[in-house]
Every structure is written in structure tokens, then in C-alpha cells.
Length: 400
Image (cartoon, rainbow, N blue to C red; front, side, top):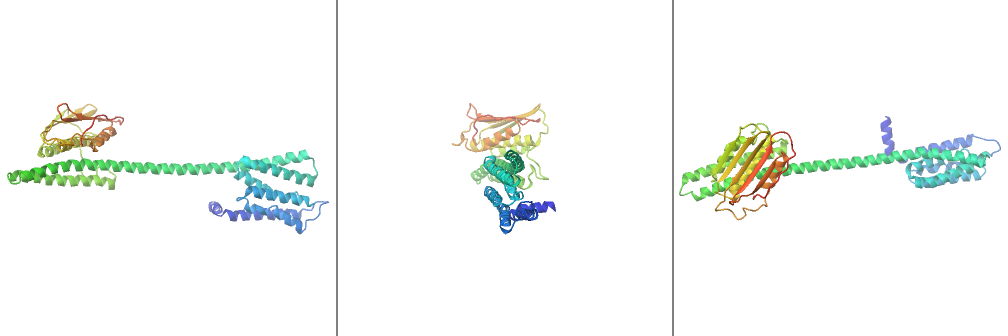
């Protein structure tokens, strides 16, 4: 109930101010009309009007606290100068002073405090007839106490406002981090799609060209090439479906589906050979299961490298050396020079090398790539198979 009332009050400040101003005004009138000190005239309508004006302006204290304080002090001094007992007309000025202290910095509140002290001193000297020093001490103490409460309220409000700003800033930063994470994930998936599409389209292109070339002279070879195109197309669609499923499931491998890894190396080598690339595969060390990320990284680097051989050095012999070593796995894909090397073979404008470098760096590995002295090209990758993701990549430029 209390929380609801507080929430309602914060949403209706003017209503709250009207209620408070009405209560202060009513209290002032009750005290002024009910208290009849000796030797002082009984307050009539004129005195009650002035007493009302010493408190009623507080209804506007949130909007113009300094102006309201000046008005309340002015009417209190007027009430005293009119010859009435002024010991009961300071409620409005005290409330206005608290509001000034709670809503204005000390450099603004200080002159207002001097005004309040002057009002207290004048009204009390006239009312009680005590010494100026005593009045001054009491007035300063009362003003200081009210300022202390009001200033503490102001500081608390400022801290709350700062907390709101900091919370909003943190929320914006969190949203920015989430957006960056989503963008990075989309870029990763886009490169995954690039790997899948580039490899399979290269194989399909080579096989379709072969089928067209031998369609009449060697129908059997043409049929075999077209069969390879069909198989690679189906596999390409399957891998595209798998990669796009990451967008929906947020998983590295959808359920009930075989993940990509080095266990599919024979299948990849068969496709490359069927596309017309003489490929030699050498495996050193004892084969063992690798962490899924490292396994995928190694497979994708091999796939991208062999795809680049198809695209940029068709017909050139290629060699893959894969070594299982203690604590790491390393591989090297190299190819010789091709007599039909394409004009853009030495370009580096694609994203293949960038993707391979980022894959290697993600798993703490190193990747080097560059031309060979005989005119070919080589890519080497070393990835640790134990914990640790602090590696970096280096290397040259690989055509894509």
C-alpha cells in the first residue's frame, strides 16, 4: 500500500504540493488565530490574510523555490511590521528554504539562507525583544539545520539521477555488445557458407566442364562427371542446410547430423581427385579424436586450400600432409605450378585466407601461406589440441 501511494505521489507532484501547502497554511492560520499573547492585538481579517500569504505560495515551491522563499519571507516581515505577533508565521518560509536547499546548489542557496536569517532575526527581535546576538545565533542554527537536511536530500537525488544515467549507459553498452556478438556470429556463418559454396561450386564447375568436353567422344566419362555433379550438389545443399540451421538452433551441429571433421577427409580427397587434381595424402602419427572445434578448423583449412587449387591452379599436382603430434595437430597443403594457371591466381581479394587465419587464431593456432619457389603455393596450419586460445596467425597472401 505504501509503495503504491509513493508511486502515485511521484506521478502527481502538483497534487502533493497543493496538499502540503494547504496543510502548512491551515496550521499557520490555526496557530495565529488560536494563540493570543499579552500586549499584542488580536489578528483580524487583515492579519489572517497576511498570515495566509506567508504559507500559501509554497504550492509553487517546486517550480520556483527561490521566488517562493522571497515571497514567504517578505510577507512574514510585512506581518511583523504591521504590528502583529510574528512568532507563528515562519512555517511557509522554513518549508520554502528546505526546498531551495534540496533543489539548488550551495552557491544559489547561500544568498537565500542569508535572507532567511535576516527574516528570523527581524521577526524575533521585534516579537520577543531579545538581544541581537542571541537571535542571530538561533537564526543561523535553525537555518543551518534546515539546509543540512535539504542538501542531503539534494545529494541523494543527484546520486539517484547518476545511478539512472549509469544504468542506462550500462544497458546501452550491453545492447551494443549483444549486437556486436550477433554481427560477429553472422560474419562467421557467412564465411562458413563461403567455404561450403566455394568448394562445391568449384568441383561442380570442373566436372560440368569435363562432361561437356567429352560428352560425344566419351559418354561414360561424361556420365561419371555428371554423377559427380549430382552427388556434390546434393552434399552442397545438405551442408548449406546444416550451416543455415545454426541461425535457427544456435548449435554448432544440429541433432542427428554428422559433424564435419577429419574423418571425412577421404570423401573430400575423392572429390578433389575426381575433379582432375592429382592429390597425394600423407598422414603421420596415430590418428586420434580431436576437439570438435579443432577438428572442424583443420578440415575447413584443408577444404579451402584444395578448393583454391581447383580454382587457381587446375590440373596442378597437390599434396596434403597431416601430422598428429603430441599436444597439437599440423597440416600442410601444397601444389605445384599449373600450365593453365588463371590470371587472377595470385590475387588476394577473397575472404578464404582471412577465414582460415581467424579459424586458426580462434583455437590458438598459427597459419602460414605463401608462394613456393617452383611457382606453386603452400598453406601450413598448426593447432594445439589442448586447452588454450592465445595463439595468433601469421603468413603471407593466398589467392582466393
